Amino acid sequence: MCYKTLLTVLLTSLLVSSAANAQAVKRKFEFGSAKRTSTAIKLDAESKYSKQSGFGFEPESEITFRLGAESCSNDKPFQFSVAVPEGNYRVTLTMGSKFAAGSTVVKAEVRRLMLETIDTPKGKFVTKSFLVNVRTPQISTGGEVKLKDREKGSERWAWDEKLTLEFNGSHPTISAIEIESVSVPTVFLLGDSTVCDQPGEPYASWGQMITRFFGDKAAVANHAESGESLKSSLGAKRLEKVLSLIKPGDFLLIQYGHNDEKEKGEGIGALTTYKASLKQFTEAAKAKGASVILINPMHRRTFDTADKITNSHGDYPEAVRQAAKEENVPFVDLTAMSKDLYESFGKDGSGVLFKDGDGTHHSKFGAYELAKCIVQSIRDQKLALAKFLAKGLPKFDPKKPDDPKTFAIPASPAVTDQKPLGN
Figure (cartoon, rainbow, N blue to C red):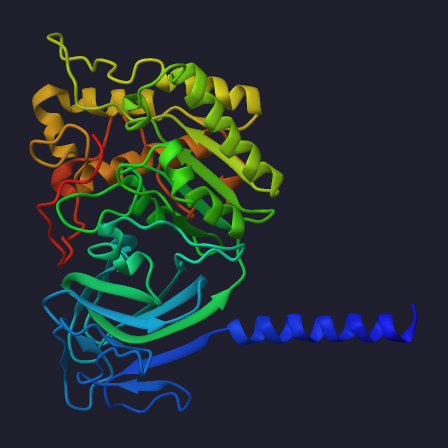
């Protein structure tokens, strides 16, 4: 290799290294006035988020600090944000207080469930880590995702410049937060309103619940959106955005159907254009070295007189099965599992899985149970993704679901009467 070529290689390597280092993030925050770590940023109740500081409590958050204490707490949910570049981040939380017992549930970005109830008796501290994906609309290969108005409003936290944590529970109590950029496999999601991060109570989707079932070795990036079909997602550059980020070792879970089946036109149908588009999405991700899992749509809440679910999707569930077989990729039969789940509650009782008066969109409990269905299928098939799931998860049988009376995920502050797009 000549001197000029060697110099070019070295300079290029340095530039790449410098760019990578410029994106590296490692920040630690401690709450209260107690001095513990000299390198941590100390915060008090007046530490509100601003673009100038790049960190702090969201303005609407109400915080309680004890004089000389080493934690913050409240009897209401509160949010804390840190400005970070697009990427994956390991969040390490220390929960607890010397002065009072705490009970904390943690969500991230747009109501993604990260940690279920963590109880901390007075004087006890618990440390937990999880991964959060942060994204922006800009596409590195050019252009940007065509956001809907709701994505610029109630869903803006899914696309903004910061990582936002929601501390919830009967008495959320936080002592320290550490946020560090990491290079880990990413599990991308593409789909519709039954998959996306729903912005407000009482709606929820399995995509914002499945985050709780992963360990701290893979991050979930939910690029699904309400009202989307394969065709509209392609037009909005959602697939293009995912392809600009996805890499070997990553995963892509795809679940559409609810809106695709309403598209009209010559030659449009489940076993024609829909299956062809599924294969197009699959082949594009595989070309990037990623692993694809196809998921057919869950049923709507449509029961017959015998208290059995009727198929409102026609050939669309079968089209997903065929596409998976033809592309030689794993297939999750959510259509079949949701039938078992809904029928286990019966026509009348199954309302607990849905938002009141809505037979398509789910409650938190329904979304949580559907996420468990998908996780169990991944485990049963011994898919490569299974090794990234949290340890010690109990086996789930949709014919014997959880008791909704024991479901204890609290409501987030954001509430909406705006129905998700699509049906």
